Image (cartoon, rainbow, N blue to C red):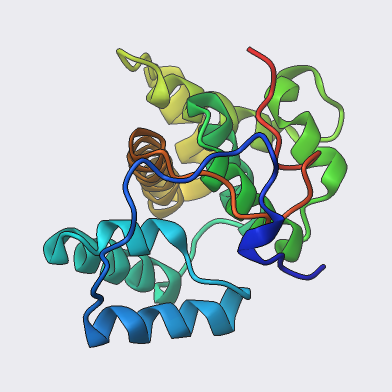
Length: 200
């Protein structure tokens, strides 16, 4: 699978509500070059948040730290949970980019398309369904995570795994809500079927 160019955006998508800074700092240009090498194009969320140096660097350093830290969860589970949050919130960019990462990790197209109705799907394990159910409960406003959910996942994943799971849910809430509010949309990392928003 190859990454598309910005010109390959889906026709129904629109540009972000604010443009990247007209004059970019050297550090921002270096980060843009790095992400272009990694993913085939510059990450639009990073370019938009470059208006605020503190936000730009806190986001970047947080993502790099998380990427380099030891993971206690299987990569496919991590990707499914984050994809579920992006679908619930309705962030086109996070669905698009997250789908690309999930496919690279071994999640199938069929699983990604089944995430909106995961509870009734035979494509997911019991653990994957319980993790996505916790993601739903933590993403709801107000949240409604139960002691039973936490206790069950703590037994299955261990305390470090549980903390990582909840952190990923909260982090994807942050990403998706930020991108959604700023109007950052999909960049064509995956095809229109996989990254389409589910019907409401």
